[in-house]
Image (tube, rainbow, N blue to C red; front, side):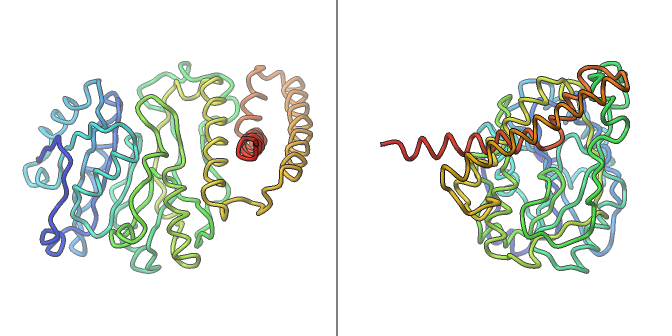
Length: 350
């Protein structure tokens, strides 16, 4: 086991003589209660003669028992495994800063990013190796299947959330294997070639979670830079890389879900301003945006009315249609245009 609490990077000589192919980077902040689930699953990855790997835990200045949790976990590792693992304390707050620290500390030619709420099966890394070998992408990722924490009674989760998703949270219908022409990978399940990051740069600290502050978009912004260089056959999505992503009870609360929806809309609006190619329409005219705002408002009102009527017929909890609205994407799309309108007015003000 290796530990570090100051920023640093491997020398070029180290990188030229690397023995690992994959560097699995797990960034964490105040998740000591569930971090061991993720670490235990990684520790069970099967060895393979065709590749090697290392695991880096990046503690983003947690103020809970994260460091002790990691220490206790390291004590359970077989001695043959311990040299694969390292712990690093990154005091500069922000998920992007933590991921960038992991990049600097890592030795692999492929950088694998997993969330601290993830659970991978023993063959997951071998499947990643096969996908890379067959498709030769510069960046690759897969879906995650949401699950509730096994040790927490479902009564702790919001009733309306359970009503909507049941046992299949975040199960999507578009898990088709494909090359991506726009950002579509989740930051908690993706791998990037190191030499690619040397071309496009690391994660932008202006995006991504920062302590208890909710922000998104760091992986989307990076994918936009990558797609500018590799618009075709660069970023690959593979259902073979599916993993489990646990959801905490507090994240299912209606207010938290609404705040997350609004923040995602704000981040998309910001990304569309800084990366115009990300916008669904190239038009930046105020009248055009206002028309889209009116149209989406009308569509949302109809959708809301229908959902509440359905809930009344089925006698579902009043919060059920609220979750339907939040997770439909329609509310986020409306708020996103609203942010864009405000931004245009602000930047065109005399």
